[in-house]
Length: 77
Image 1 (cartoon, rainbow, N blue to C red):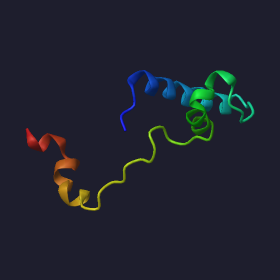
Image 2: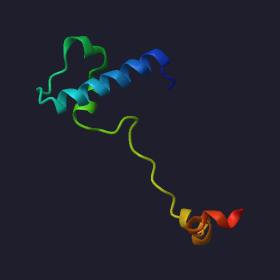
Image 3: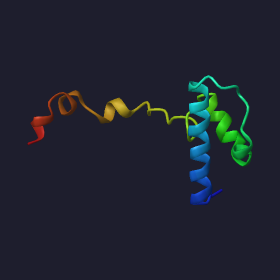
């Protein structure tokens, strides 16, 4: 489901304000202003990564990148 840009922006701000509240030692209670985005605020407070789970590195990634190309960046020039 697509989320409107403005709604996504508000959810991002709610997450950031939740994270800041945790750092400031505030209690884990969503302020009235953020009730519409309470889930994002709580995720920020609980230090849940924004945007869900991080993507895992593919198991065949090492086979695609050889040590010579990574170890010596000037080799290609």
